Length: 238
Image (tube, rainbow, N blue to C red):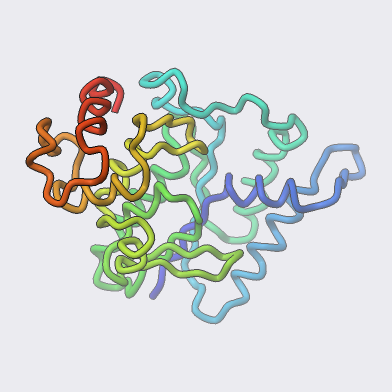
């Protein structure tokens, strides 16, 4: 069997901005929930979709906000969208999908935990993470765990991660820490772009393993000395 893991927060946001405004008979906004249900019903109609779970960021904040002041929050999220989260969770549950409403942790944490768990189950032929979120690429393993961008119909396996980012899936957290991730409010390290980062991480895999002396980087990206200095200055934040 295949396990499909859905990012309910992403899907609800996408539906909100894609659907025209709509209210229930009692005046509550429901357009995002309607769009979400249409999307999920289309998925459930596919022949190989039998075991599905969906995680929601119930409060759009987590323990990471305590660790880093600049981490993403719910600030700026339209009230008419926030008000639909509880209804969305109830609607998805009614569809027979397992729902994980996350509070202290994030939807990504639930999805990653489930992917790791079910990838080890002999009954599971493949875990499909239905999300375009770069963070979740760290969970990809061969073709056993893959990411699916449902909108673009692109499946990313381990070779796809390497082709796209230039690093193994296990190095994705380090890659995003260096390059930055605007979606999560992660600024990255000055001058560490995608090419230089992949060159270094393809050798050392993790930030803490990168030698302080750039002479040990072989091959070394352009401007290696400056990159090493910037990384050293940002060590407490990476």
